[in-house]
Image (tube, rainbow, N blue to C red; front, side, top):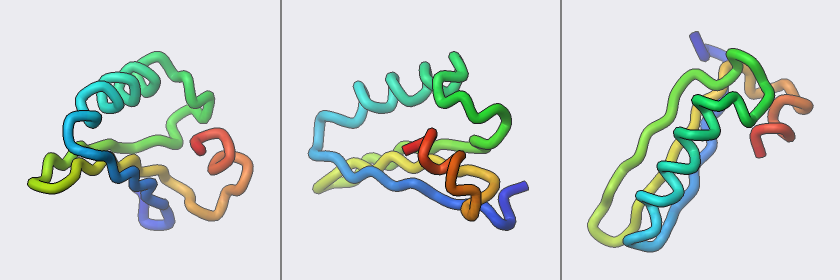
Length: 70
């Protein structure tokens, strides 16, 4: 579904990810990005030295949508 999509990556210090993850999920559920069905996935990766949040969108070449997500 996101063959031409993009991925946003945020690297965080240990301990910060749970709060950011909660905010990200609530924003996705509440449609706070105002991009309709453009967002197609998110993941949190808890690593030993850092945590990583990733967000996928369907069309990486749509500048207006990317600005809204950013």
